[in-house]
Every structure is written in structure tokens, then in C-alpha cells.
Length: 104
Image (cartoon, rainbow, N blue to C red):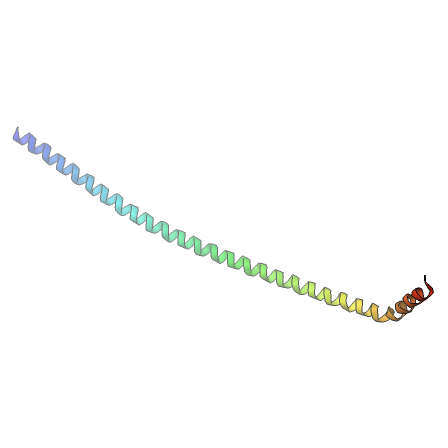
């Protein structure tokens, strides 16, 4: 009887030991997975920031090109307007003056 009790106690102790070892393995795996997840998240975040920076630079370059094109068009338009003004302002002044004086 005592032998049977000893066997039961020993089996219980062995089972508890295996359960504890399994818990420790699970805890170690959980920590390992958490570390790996953190490393993957950091890598993905860094990659996302790089892609965002690349897209931002590309967009900025496109905006600068468009801005230069708009500025060039504005300069050309201003030059054409200045030419028209210089070519016709005397005649426009005379016509306006005549219209005011004549009451037209």
C-alpha cells in the first residue's frame, strides 16, 4: 500500500515537474515571440518611414518643377502685358481723354 502511495506521489511530483517545465517553455516562447514581433514592428515602421520620406521628396520635386513652370508662365504673361501696354497706352490715353472731353 505504501509502495502504491509512493508511486502516486512520485507520479504527481513528476507531472507537476512536467507542467512547470511546460509553463517555463511557454513563457520563454512568449518572450521570444514578443521580441521577434517587436523587431518586425520596428523594421516595418522604419521601412514605412523611408517610403513616406521617399514619396514626400518625390512630391516636393514635382511641386518645385510645377512651381517653376508657373513662375515662368507668369513672367511670360507679365512681359506680354507690358509689351501691349507700352505699345498701346498712349493711344488708349488719347481715346479716353477725348471721350471724357467730348462727353461721350
